[in-house]
Image (tube, rainbow, N blue to C red):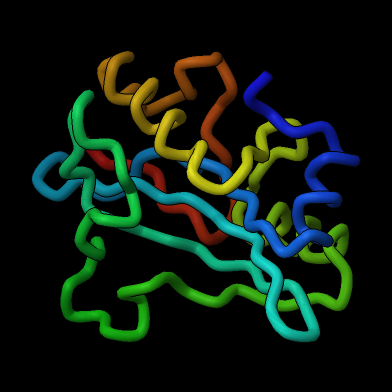
Length: 147
């Protein structure tokens, strides 16, 4: 089972493991990107990071962490944008969901977002919904692709 039940989601964060969620495509026909959100443990809190990268992958190259930033001139956004912090994991997940439109039932363990991206590529990079049929979020931090 790819998606984490809430108890496993929170347990992973308490153990210091990150959780991630693919948010879908962004950009325009001439400049395609992909967004994903990460919740990670910090020293005394939990941080929420939004990553926006160029969609340069393929079925054989799915490591989103290796993709170049969507905006190469934005040095602050090169490693993601810190959206917020919280003192406990559930509050951090809520921050992520409120800021990005992420869905509670679609969180995966760290690194599994690469598999989500691979499914997205194999499905032809759908702009309206994930390959699993989940609509891409409409959260305020997510720009929809423009044709």
